[in-house]
Length: 523
Image (cartoon, rainbow, N blue to C red; front, side):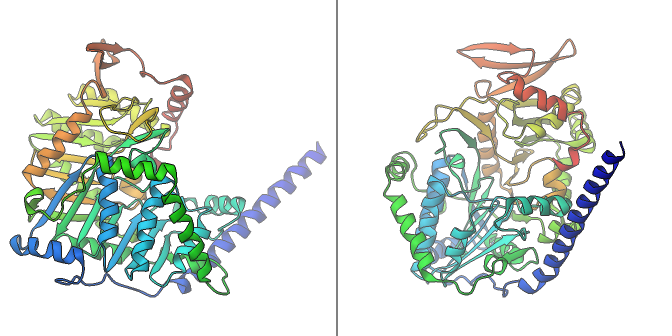
């Protein structure tokens, strides 16, 4: 008994020492980080005819002064091609901001175009969140070694190669380490903006064999681009955005490293899978003609909404997106249609939605079913609100896990999942972006998106969301004899389920357990 006490005491002391050392290292890193901030840079000003994008878009803006032209991109292959084509057309700058960028089939094809742009003189600024960057530093450093490319990481960990130390660091500063940059922004020459829910990876472009996402982007030109550029600059020059080279002890950055990366990307582009992907894109995705004024929806009521980067430190609460989005939703009068793959309304949010429904507003919510979601913990928290929302007269739809086979897919996939973050208010105002209706988007992660008052585009978005709510694509929930029932259309017949459909026990049990844990604020 006495020996056991000493062992536990030694373990406690060792743990305390580890924590103290970890906190000391983190504090030191925080002080050093202030000296490691990169030199501030700003978006390059647009010119009348300097680049191909200038020459194509400037005349449109003369016809539509003070307006923004928007194009909804619901097809994954079109969204992929839009990024590919704008990278190829860029002649001045590419400003790219993402939660993550995978080194997979589509990720490498798009990075090849970014590298090609840099080689022809385009300035590239790549800002990535750090949480998914572990293990990718050699490639990112290779990119950064080119004189026309700079890579910065948002809220980076000090440990770059040791997974244990990285885990310890994250654990010691949990409440700041979990604040991530969830923004998605693709800016070409300050002329074309692509924003929405898609990161860069196969599952966002219908190229994954395992699972693909249903998602939506908006391509924008015109007046709102200045807001997008200002938002990117603010993040790029913020305290949490550190140059990747400042996180490493490098004697020099050697160009051969970039040449090896470039050669690897070129070799990848000639592989069988890459050639098949590009042919598939050519056959099934027409290049979006954003140079045609008639194919764009024009409006003066377009805003680029973005959290301030200070949100990563818990500051500037009065300018966070969540407050504005909650206000917009609360002002709905006739109808509210929401798509949120990770949907946790919270007590206050559920009360707001119920109040809208009781006032005669038609409220419809689309989210993932337990079988389709890629984050079981979120579903466990969401499940607590279903009964109250249904009793208030709110429609709930949960996307099924089966892939929508009407879409062209390169490889096919075993499952599909909702990833669209959007809403339509009163059929006239819409939003597409990275913001989920959950505590993480509201209070922890930074987010961005496009808010537009444009009835024609709002109707297009409404139709796209309603297509994902059809009974052959999603389950419709209802209460029968005070019990939840899921209804779907299968083989031309309505089929009802008395429990979470298509969800095995290995999914149901964790979701049920999480529903009882007090962790909703972190989800």
